[in-house]
Structures are given as structure tokens and as C-alpha cells.
Image (cartoon, rainbow, N blue to C red):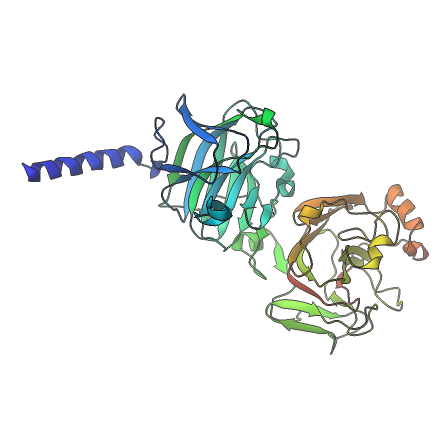
Length: 456
């Protein structure tokens, strides 16, 4: 009798397993009736079953609350449906995330990758956030074509694909974010109920249903080559980046492709390549008095330029574009400049007009509009980006946030030049093509992951 009982139990378990995993390899993470396989942690928000969905309900006086899977997952495709009732809520779906029961003074802490759910006017749903750790990895401003896809009051289709270091997201079948990152290779999946700041926000609901995951026979899904890849692995390009036209301007080990401004070779002093970083060494804080500026051998016209930079306290530098070297001037070579500056300590932040010499600004011309929370302070890596479209529309980004835009050669642009230090240079910044320049301003600044894509 005991043997028959064991056989029967095995058969029942096998039937349950087969009911969970279908013929295409999908496994249901939610049975539509219970919270089996899930555990609430880190907060006191409520989770309950309503009409075959998990309902997350906000409560006052609690931090973010998470319903986490009892199992960890590595490579997978995750699909589910989510409904947010109005534009005042905020939530997220954790994936490959970690849970530390001892975190937050023993209350528990969930941290790691998050698929953002943001129905506000910002519209960053399907962007990738690093909860409790690095903040934003992929603000959806990097792919504005997907920003209007979330609909409130109805169910939306969510898809997350994690294969190796590649992370991709979709919202309602629209490709959204593409991150390449190697911090976490596996972790839990979790449903977040965000904390609320006002008592009247209590009782807000978010719904999740049809939650399923596939972990075998995975094949990377294609993304449009126009979607920017946030690759956090220094000085590397993925195969998809290479196929879409990206090229490294710094290989991480040499100065190949660079030379001194107004020179035929790379400077003999003032710059160093070490530990995958291209760094200008400190001198006296003056322009081009040590190694001097360096420029790319190649010239560029329309392009998408991305670079990581790390400032030291009080540092000043810049990344210039459309540098023609035709001026033969003293000091730093002339060009349009993405300003690199420690705004809190360097006096240049208070010079110029209306803040147009601050970090990420178009130096001496247009102020970068940015929030302090999106600036990583000296000693940390930031990501700058400059896009010059074929129609001469230009955009500056800082850590994935667009901070300014303008049109080269327009009346508005020329009016700004007329008020600046550049007014003495005829047709300043309007050359058909030019070099990319890294500035020696006498302060220690490091660069890495310098990459460019030519635009047609």
C-alpha cells in the first residue's frame, strides 16, 4: 500500500508540473487563485486575489513593499499583464533582483533591476531602474517612441528578456529599453507596491495577471538598430551594436585613433591609459598647458556620440565636437563643447550667462536643464551623450536624460553665438565635419567607453 501511495503522489506531482509548464516551455508563476510561490517582504502594503489577478494595495506609513518569488531565475523571458488605475500611481516589476532580510535595519531590502511602471506625465514605463542601488540605468527618454504606450485603467502587456548580459523590455509589444549589464546574473522576480507620501493615496490598486516565464530554448529577440543600447560594460560593444554601426573611439588599452590637437602624434606627457581608462593628468588648472587637448584622427559629420567620464573634485574639462583645428589659436582648440564640470566646487559654474557653463551645458551658449539626483558626483562615472542629426538638430544627454537641444546654424543659435566668447570666430560651430576633442584643462578627468555611430 505504501508503494502505491508513493507512486500515486508522484503521478499527482507530475500532473501539477505539466499543468504549470505548457508545450512551448512557458511556466505559470501565478495560478490565478492563490499566492502560492510568492512571499511579501520589506513593507506592509496589501496583496490579495481579485478576479483572477494579484491586486497590490497601498497603505500609509510603510516603505516600498514587494511580493517576491520563492525561486530565483537566471536567463528567461518573462511575460505578464499589468493594470494601473490612474496617473498618480507608481510601481515596478523586479527581475534578477536580490533580497536581504537583514537590510533596512532588519525590515528587509529588495534591490536590483526593475521594470518601471510609470503612468505619470514623465512616461518612463518599461525603462530599467536599479532599485535600492544605482538608480536609473535606462530612463525611457532614451527611447521616446515607446513613452506613450502605457494605458491606464486597462491591462497592458509586459515583456522582459534576460539572456546573458542582455536585458530587453517591451510594453504592449513595443520594444522599449536595451541594457547590457553584468552586475546580477540571477535573482528573484517581484511585484512592487510603492510607498505613498500622502494619506489620501491609501487604497490605490495595481493589478498583475497571466504571469508566466520561459527559461529554456531562449533566442534573443531583435531590436531596432535605432534604439540606443546602454552598455555598462566598459570599452565593449555587443554584436548588435556593431551591426547597427557603433564603433569604439577608445579601445581601453591604447591611444590608437587619437593625437594631440595641432600635433601629428599623441602627447608625450599629460595623458595616461591605465585600467581601461584614458585620463588627463592634473597640472595647474589652465587650458592645454601640460599634455594639451587630444582629438580623433577621424572627422565626423552627423553622429551619435556616447562617453563615460569621471571627474575629480573641482575638476573642469570638456568634450568638443566639430573641431576643425583651422583657428590655430592658443589654449584649447575651438569647437562646440559638452561641458564637464564639478558644478559645486568649480567657479566656472557661476560664470557665463544663466548657468551656461555648468555640467552638460553647451559651453557658454545653452544651459543644461538637469536635476541633482541625476548627477553622479566626482569620483563616480557619468555617461554623456551628444546626438547630431543629419538635419543639424543637436541633443545633449546626461545619464540618459536629455538636458538640452538646439539647431546648428539656426537664427536662434547664431543669436546665442553673438552673445558669447565665440563671436570672434566666423560661422562658429557650423562646419560640415570635425574632430571629437577631449580637453586638457589642467584637472584630473578620466574617460572610458567612448563610442560613436555615424548617422545618415
